[in-house]
Image (cartoon, rainbow, N blue to C red; front, side, top):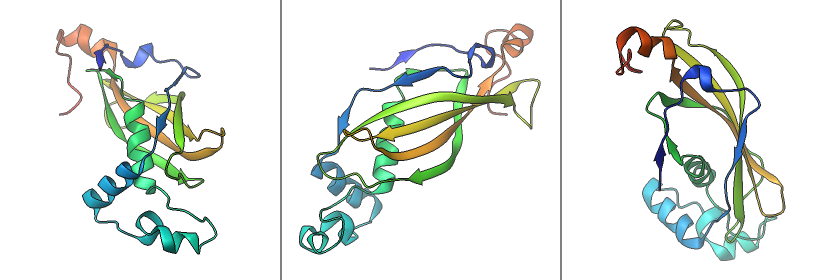
Length: 164
């Protein structure tokens, strides 16, 4: 269940981090993702073929691990922020059926948004995904656009809005 918590740009602190609980990647996850994306490559779907390869077993799609891990960090709804995208996505190691992943997200940088520095800031969050053995399997930087507090003070509770 998500909670709502307003957090303005000025409320973020570089170095602050949060950690998820674990989530086990299942065969059902892989099959569903293949159906949604059309990616039926044998790396994900063909147990016998995978047994002949160096990795030896079916692995999750990188985009599945990306989607699940980003979702694992999305417990709080902040009406003052929205995702601006993802940078430096790296699939470091494969994730296999029955691997359990956890996510750590740390605020690593803050800056004024280049298109609207008086109204918006940008927050960079390093997202690191590890398997049950503590090995990093994926990393990325999640970028957020966040409304500045002075916008609300100048324009009332609706602020200047993130879009527009």
